[in-house]
Length: 162
Ligand SMILES: [Zn+2]
Ligand SMILES: [Zn+2]
Image (tube, rainbow, N blue to C red; front, top):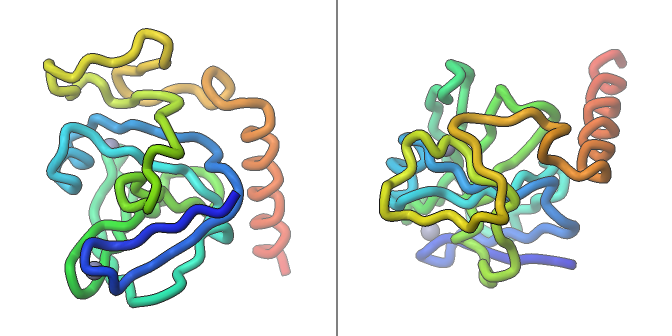
């Protein structure tokens, strides 16, 4: 499965193949501010899966809720946020904003996080797990995604040694 997306002005285009490791709906205040919405839908992808096919990204450094670096990448022309890199997240991950996809319907959140700052009128589906802050990986992730993460971290370690 290949998915494509881009920014509002059309200068930046990207594509990825394969499934996200997990899909987060994050209700934290940072995500509300960055998106201007009630929450963000982030597709947690391995960095090497996401390919820029046109345009240029700019980056801006923020601090995540954990105090670790959070880089946001946006179109240099129109300012649309395409994805984030959270330095606190294991592996080399890109958190792709689902709203920038050509077909955002293709994905739905596996889990809602940081619901402590969820807007009160947002009603979450009862069948989707939700956490006031974050969760433990083995509580929420599929065995297949856990294995992919383990594999990627293994590769990263191996290249760091060389
Ligand atoms: Zn743009
Ligand atoms: Zn957030």
